[in-house]
Image (cartoon, rainbow, N blue to C red; front, side, top):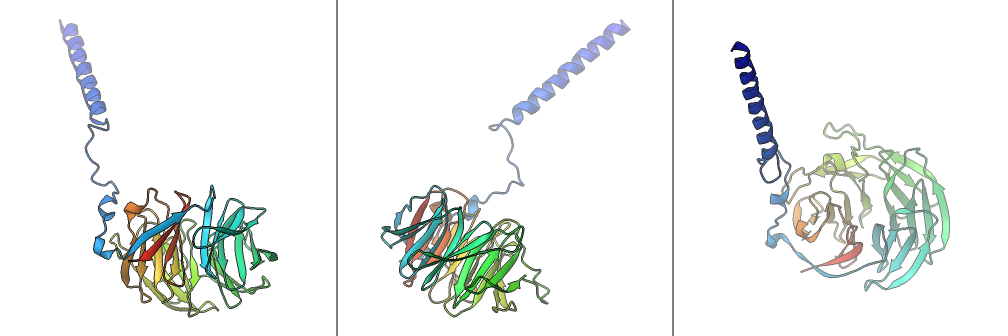
Length: 318
């Protein structure tokens, strides 16, 4: 009898264990599991007050790339890279010129008479007719160019792999390197968790560098001395969040910043002081989490290169 009691006890215990396992399995099914209270959810931040949106999308067109990579606006033209070419198009989307490249381009910047294209490990320079006039290799073994900016014969190259900004002359000679180091206790060099590292020079000749890991903009002299900076880490509309934002930026003619963020994708305007001004495009405008590259024309219209839809989207002030 004693042995029968033990066997009966073991059978009952086994049935209880099976019931618990089945119950746990059923509760973990997608339609049965409880909500994770620690889940990172950005849905509540996707809704933007319509009064903050001061731009409207007026047109869009596809430049014909399977993998677009960069955009710039200068000389009343649009310069866009992708696949293995650089295309120059007018504001209606008409192709004016196409330059076939041997390798895949990373980004592009144009000034009044020259066009600069970054490829893996090197910079190409073209004249306004699209003829190659110079080429130089980058010094770092880990170089990964994410942006180019030019001003009066100075060519600035943002290298996310080396975590530096290099200043070249038009002959391709390095003038100096900017590492983002300073005596300011708030700053800690350029913190670049992923390959998003943008630079630009405004119409007044001010070099600004995004320190993406700090959600900061830093203004340097051409020689590499920090002059000022501003930052805003926040999930709210006026700030930047995530590991490395803003991912891209450009300037309006008055010196205001046009910023583009990944993850919580949105395009915004910040005043020259850094103060939030308005929204260009809300997150609901985008179907992926990639930040569009941005450029602006002399009238303050904004051109967003949507990598997901492979198109250029034009936003004009309301």
